[in-house]
Amino acid sequence: MAFHIQTEDSGIRNPQITTLLYRGGSIIASKKTDYSDIIMAEMLEKVVEDLMKEQHKDMLRRLKSGEFDNRIIPAPEADSPQKTSQASTTVSQITPPGPHPSEQEKHSHPEKTLDEIIFDYLASTKD
Image (cartoon, rainbow, N blue to C red; front, side, top):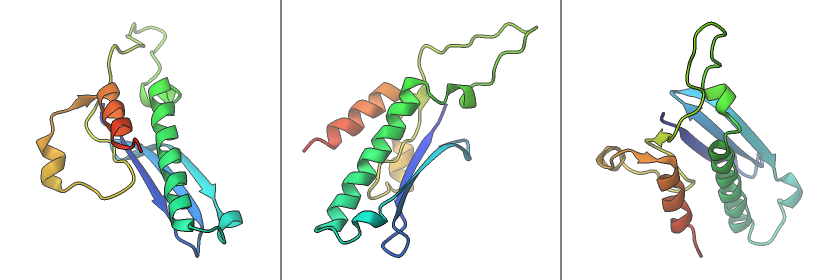
């Protein structure tokens, strides 16, 4: 299963951070945070960047915890037996906030499990 998480800042004129979780082009979940109350904060750019990273990581945590499973995996029909759990979920792309990889970079990496992508992402964001 391939997922894509996208986090965007709408800017000072519309101070809102939006995070969307996609699967196959369909939005599975979204979260919006208004930051108009801190628009005059010192180092606003850094504060907003940190808010974006945290909101992005939160969506990733929620995905991993199974919160969206009922939206992702169709419920089994009463008369047709079906597996309702998966041993491992494969994610081909989760995009953290920041520069987007080139198309060539996207396709040069083999698919990774969700755990591998989370580990790589968290390792890359350590201060």
